[in-house]
Image 1 (tube, one colour):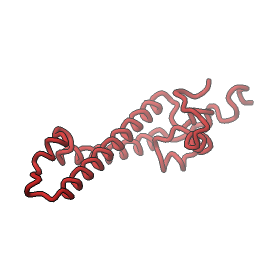
Image 2: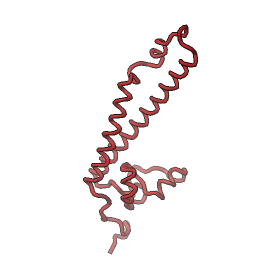
Image 3: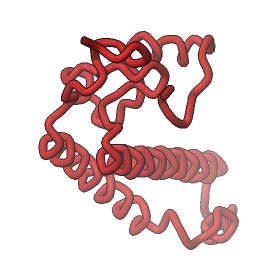
Image 4: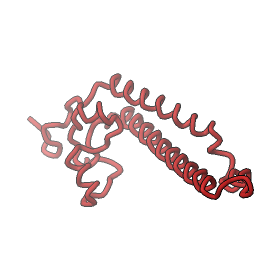
Length: 145
């Protein structure tokens, strides 16, 4: 017998918590290393204008200055991506703690273990992820009750 509001998946174990935590911890460690490397390369703390001021136009070809600007822009973009992924990991760990990890935030159905192995921070099942990517669905902060 299944609850009328939840369907047959309510109460089913979704993923093994220790395995999920291990996947998330490994991903966090990898990303933290990348973040540290980006920050220690002088990316943070020195503004672009300060960095470019060190390059004298007299002894530097203008294309080199353009390359420096493009490299810095790429690195800043990478840092933003890493920081976003680290936030996703913290949110996944909070869902794990709350008992909602591994369930689609739209419908509440279990997210397949294969998907969670590939993307431990997944918040949606494939159907709803595709709907979000296509722009047909809006993200929800909590699954339906």
